[in-house]
Length: 262
Image (cartoon, rainbow, N blue to C red):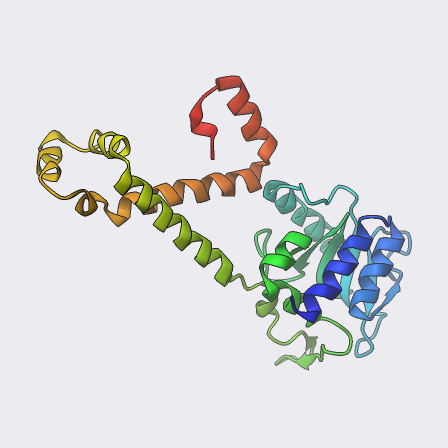
């Protein structure tokens, strides 16, 4: 585990037992910033991270808001809905500028870009995501006060250089290794299970069955069969993350179907 991962995970654990402004202050401390009031509306739920290179009367690095409903079990669908709060606040800020919007929850932080982004372009920081993908930890810590240096765009405005890199998503080596392990194991099961072979042969036309029956068992196992099974599992996990696992558990209990078994 890298230093960035450890720092963030420690902060996330603290965010599980803090509340409101205390959570916002812990997040700002992680990045080394001072938490200041919103100059457009001092009573707003949105506070600001003040960067020394910016004029706090006109520009802040990030607008942050406490979100008690943002937890480890928040689904992808619920994450996406928070983007409309970003769009709403962007209008309320009028001429005041921020580069990023962050929701600080219970052991989880969600960051959207202020301009040129969308609800699917986000940095989702949780213990699980940080442990699995160190890239996310490096992306967040690149915003820290002692590392971030603003640059000027063609119009002379101060901007975060290469802001797109904050939201870049890449598959981890662990993910690809697990997929390969699944594929090998499934192939072994198919090769060594005659009942499984028979069930698979039933899925193809009879004239193809006749052709396959003349081949050695190992020759009948096509990579596409294994890939399809793995894809089904991945899609199941995606829908669980998007809609929530409880929805699938209810459907399984009500139907009694094995379809819902991952």
